[in-house]
Image (cartoon, rainbow, N blue to C red; front, side, top):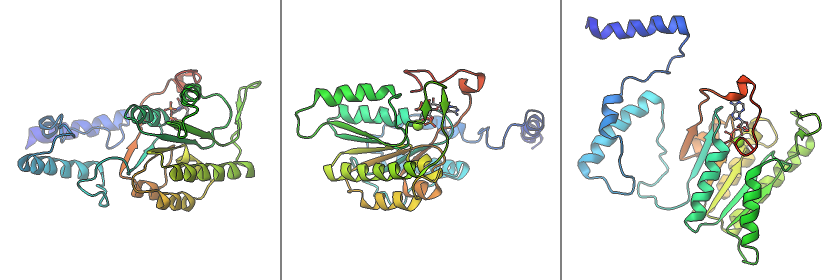
Length: 262
Ligand code: ATP
Ligand code: MG
């Protein structure tokens, strides 16, 4: 017993000195995980494997507080689920754009609504624009985007306007309408970029977004990005990824860099 206790005591002492937040270290499941380092999601699992994976996953869920969506049919195939990318770390919008590229590569049609992102500072839009132009003439373009929100960046001073005004609320409403239009057009993937933060900052009601999700046609996949996603979005989603901030050059004084951060 004593040798088993020692690492625990050692960790507690370490925590006291280095203020390691609880939950930072996950030594418990490593051995079990090694057995399932890679399970090919395209292959059906044998009954025996299904049970083994199920057991390990159940313990993992308990340890990490993961909730399995009860409303996804086990045999769900294709588009139609809801994903949320939230958290304080970098990578939410770019992960959504990565999925857009993947969907386009698979011949799917994508609609992107940018919330609270007016202005012309976002380099990916130049690329998206070129895709839109290359498919102009087609009745239904493979990718379209609608940018809503004020331009918060004052290029002459470099200052960012954090205020929330009536114009922001009107623009956010326009974003919701754009999403509805994409639903009506039957886009396979609809990305609501920064919708989480737009809600948490009070520009649109949480309920208005939940109502939008209720209107989502069955086969359309929705990706919602932005910090501080409300609990109701996490509950509604079938996938939640919390981008966790571990380091960011911004805090060392490196400003946002064109082509990487915008
Ligand atoms: P990205 O668009 O690079 O995927 P993101 O969508 O995860 O980032 P946002 O919260 O939307 O991040 O912030 C947008 C901008 O802020 C981006 O330029 C991003 O690089 C930067 N950023 C992301 N995380 C942080 C952070 N923790 N501190 C400061 N800036 C950040
Ligand atoms: Mg973002």
